[in-house]
Length: 111
View 1: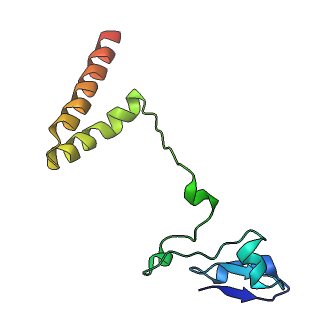
View 2 (view 1 turned 90 degrees about the vertical axis):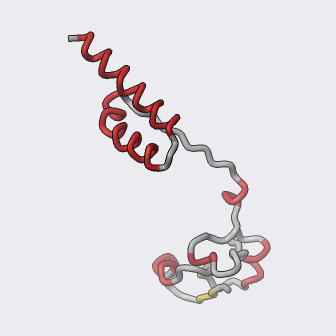
């Protein structure tokens, strides 16, 4: 579940391993386990193919945000409304359509 390699080109060797933690050093694995910062706790049941080992970011909350301009909504709004309709989420479809109608009305009034 881990790879220990003694090499003269430490930084150029990490790409060779995809799933296991890599200790590229002449130090003992024990140092990586307890003190030097690497962690070799991996997800089980094959999830290591898709997810990294446990580290400090595992316990940090991640928040996403987005901003959509009127032009952006004009560009993607029709597709969003169609997808919402296909999924039967009429409130989502109507929310997008109402905003698109509002943008269209506002741009027509500006001319």
